[in-house]
Length: 109
Image 1 (tube, rainbow, N blue to C red):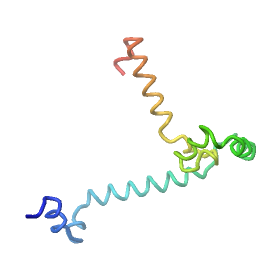
Image 2 (image 1 turned 180 degrees about the vertical axis):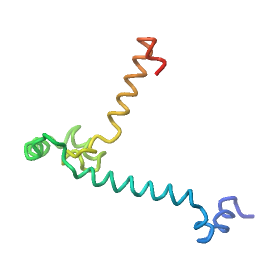
Image 3 (image 1 turned 45 degrees about the vertical axis):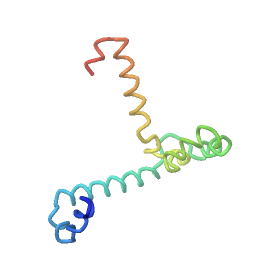
Image 4 (image 1 turned 135 degrees about the vertical axis):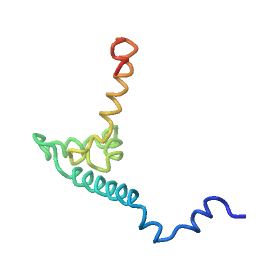
């Protein structure tokens, strides 16, 4: 007796995939978003001296800075526009949640 996953895999073919237009849109959106992110990870932040930051990064790359660089795919060492990833969003959401307990009008956010 075949499992549900095996039955689904047996019924999948290229013709049924061609009919899934919503899936096509989602896949193309994901591919375009990944390309934009990868290109943005090579665009340096305006106003930052890249050479000075590279010297600073090379001297301190074993600590927390190296870990951030690892999580960003090397974008921190290049000081790229997308080097921060989702870290600012996560930090801001934590701060807003904590402020909600201290200041009641913030709970509505």
